[in-house]
Image 1 (cartoon, rainbow, N blue to C red):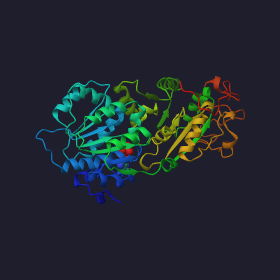
Image 2: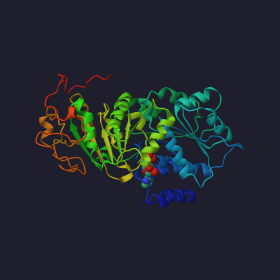
Image 3: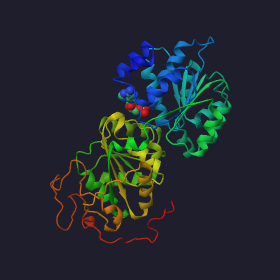
Length: 441
Ligand code: AMP
């Protein structure tokens, strides 16, 4: 299947060529004809599958072919996105795909002054990409009206729910004309989202891309059993492999992300953090540095990393395992973008074993264990998994890859603080609750 077969207009085909896309991705093949036909869609797809183009291209075509009814430019499309990063990226996609159509788009989100956004609205746009909070704010101030919306896209609906935006989303939907086309995308379909989908979509066509397990199969995954207090030293050890060029490290909390950056800084590893407590400018700067290669390690929390669209992320490291197995799939999907291959490492301490089991159940794969590393927690390797554990070292590494072969007593590569030189053989904080879900603070 080629883009030419999808009945897209020339100006869009030119833009797609300019982006260097050789052929449409599966979600694009499935969704584009239905969106062009005006159908409602419920799409099960995660970021990284090409879903933005799957809705943006046919939307641009519908707008370009159906003339504006009013004299003045009014907003005809609303795309709601849970995060600012994703909203900006969707805006960039509309700009790229719509560059030869003459259609205008605008992006609004919180955390920055509203005046430039108000002026943008006043000048007139066809497509509005927004996060729910700021949009509702502007609506309540009477600065924006949604009564001319023809197409509504709710992106990453499950994330909206996770982030507590669902109430805002419902309010926004109630301000939309009932006569409209609605597209809902969600990586997972929890009952609340299914319920919302049932209420806002009319005879939707369901489009779904390759089951998640198939997507993650492309990614080389491994797990390191380690005790909590050794995770930082293990990270430094793993990062001594220079093949790990551009790496996204996930922590559970914002505080954890900041602390890790400070520690990596002390170990002279260029790292920056990206999370919700950072200002918009700081987040953009961190992302730009990461994209350009100036920063090798970007430490992120799940929410901030959502929708980060950086090609060529060589590795994803789960410094903390996520407590929702779906997040694991989202996280590791940041590597192996659009067909490339990638590597994901997970650090699993005794308290996180239940999370690992949930993940393996979801992805229907046993994640191979890297048994040979200086911080291996012997207590962490259960009999059931050790049978298929591997002695495989991280990619590009062999026992002497960094010039610091692991000695008989298991000492670490140089650079690790001396206090951490010896692998611990016994957990100081062993809990009786291993195997149960630890309660999250
Ligand atoms: P998305 O899932 O929309 O976040 O897209 C993920 C990445 O795939 C982005 O970097 C897009 O530029 C890229 N992409 C989208 N469609 C295609 C395509 N047909 N061929 C190659 N890359 C694509």
